[in-house]
Figure 1: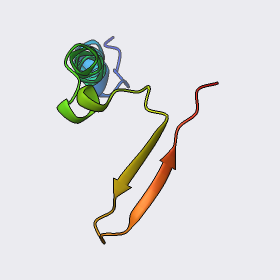
Figure 2: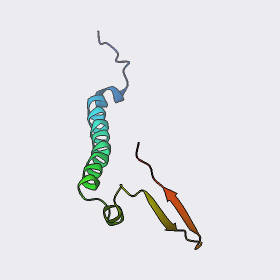
Figure 3: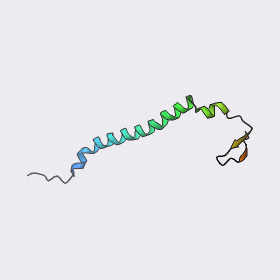
Figure 4: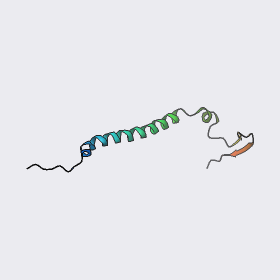
Length: 74
């Protein structure tokens, strides 16, 4: 007597699909982690020049209006 197999063919690919899925999840997170580390070590030039400790700053908007910005440290 032969047993009939009722399992679908996708069941045999489950470990392979799981590894592929985990690879893409790890790749997705590693891109964000590596870019965060890169930008922490090499900040953008505008941020590095002005610095975060500016108390008051006057900025020019694209429309040419002058806007006063206030930054407070708590």
